[in-house]
Length: 222
Image 1 (tube, helix red, strand yellow):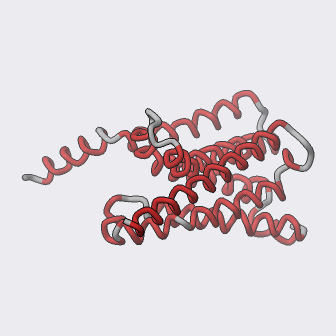
Image 2 (spheres, rainbow, N blue to C red):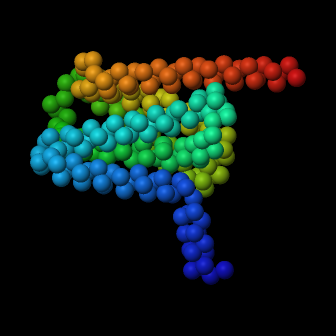
Image 3 (cartoon, rainbow, N blue to C red):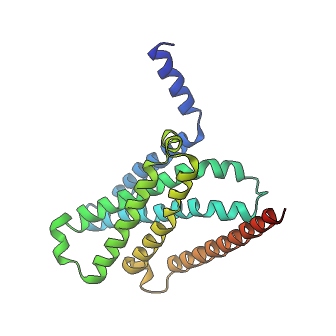
């Protein structure tokens, strides 16, 4: 097989994978969203604030969808979307990092003035930025190790263990949002939806753990 034929086969395999199209759609959407905001909001600090806030909310929503997959499908194994949802979980997680990175980049360089702006941070703001950085780094690591050839090198078992870092990263991101988010300083619809969503996730996780324990006890008695 020639190099050209190998490239053609590889491209065909890539474009036939739904994960590729999910990633392409998510990245394309980021440009459309930024363009729409720039179209309707005049250039300035308000424009950059709206863009970074929108990217932040999208990142949180995608991260939530990625976290929700395991407990939801464990508790409700007969959901008709199970196969598609399981297959899409990895690109959803990658897009969560992508939007989080865009949010962090715009916030740090456009709003906070880069490194020179650090001197003006207060203690609460520094804590929030530190927690956000922890979450971003963890999402970055999980994204870089989400490719098939990396998983094969690591072995699936070790990769699954590494994936558990997402819980630490998600907790850091949640605290980052609560500390710094203007929508959480007072009671708002955004805050209510967030807390309800987190409560649902926690309940499903507890149910998933209970089912796993029951299954392990049953297998040990068999």
